[in-house]
Length: 303
Length: 237
Image 1 (cartoon, rainbow over the protein chains, first blue to last red):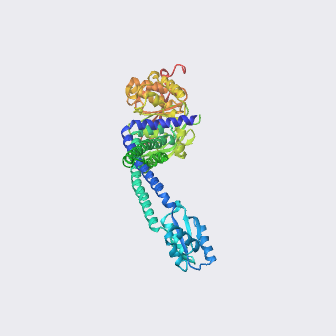
Image 2 (cartoon, rainbow over the protein chains, first blue to last red):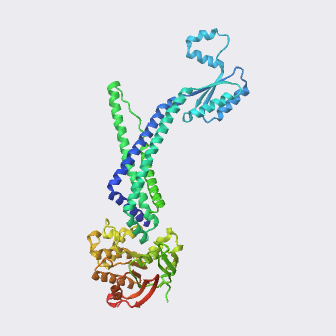
């Protein structure tokens, strides 16, 4: 029970201090709110992008064309390679006869043309379906190049143009978000750190008294860490609320718009677990800010 | 002779290595002593008390408190020895945004003492310094003497073995100064070692006890007189 009373006292110290410095608390939690709201937006945008592009990624097929006269040993080598590659989900061998049948089935108007040919122009090949979560331009390029080098392989084809464009799109969203988010996070971090520093200087005498009275060093430090966590939590709660309301607003507007023009209700999918991420990020941001503040003060010799 | 509660060996301190406040101090304070440390302003009285609390490290020599060499105690464990001590400042150093009760229970709250017990102990301690009814008040609303008594209550609520007071009557009138001394004598009568740094000779003469003076870089024993019986609580008499 003793530890519980101690924790309650520490929590009380931290909370009272936040209340006492309402102005700085308000400003810093607002900054955290904006940063985390953007963070939530970025996560949501990444989720939408992933959701919308998943069908495309799942339909990616890589074709490995074999040379005419490729023997069984060469086929086994290709299959072993496909079996071992983590990018490959399934594959299927398509013989020239099967390729021809499929072609005719797909384009019946060319039946007579195919019949008129003395030889089957369609090569034996493998249809390789890829694991969508691993489809990524560079690894695909490497896989294609490796297969290309195998004896008996005439060529490798995949929707390189699409893959490259998708990869670029993902890179822009991810790196753009990371850079902007990183800058904003650093801003928020220093804001929290400075609030904690101000709070420390305002309570310097109290800290000194506590220390002289025999408070454990952690009992003196913890309220400041907790203050950072509470600041982060406060900012993140505001951010999560704002994020939720923004999405509800966006969906309401979209529904209204699509109903008016197409008489259908279109809604953006909302990933509610982002709320937890926002809260978690807020707590971590607040704690890191407090750690940074105490570290800076120690380095300056003021704490 | 009883085992010393505070002992110094070749203790010396200087802030700038040019002017020494004191050097080669070998002092023995026994449990239950009432000690006055006197000397002019800037002589090093506060510094000596800060060395006893290990707020400062001595430039040379050692300080032993309750048999423990302060220099050898790691920072993280210093709180243990400080909990055996209480400290009273000249300027009271109460937290103005807290009530009297919150100021007095500051340490108890962090020590995990249940709120009911905290309150009981605080009110009991405040009563012992004559402020039983003021626990809800805010420090700025109190007089200097009352504030100092709150500070004393804060310093003794955890039953320290040693009470250090730095010019505790410096901001008080003679009548209130004597009242504060009466409280210190009563605390001392319950077994707590009391060390008071002051330059108020009148008060020293009035109270009695052991007297040390900081003079010419030395802390010297000057006098020892019995505590003035008129200041002692009736149960001791």
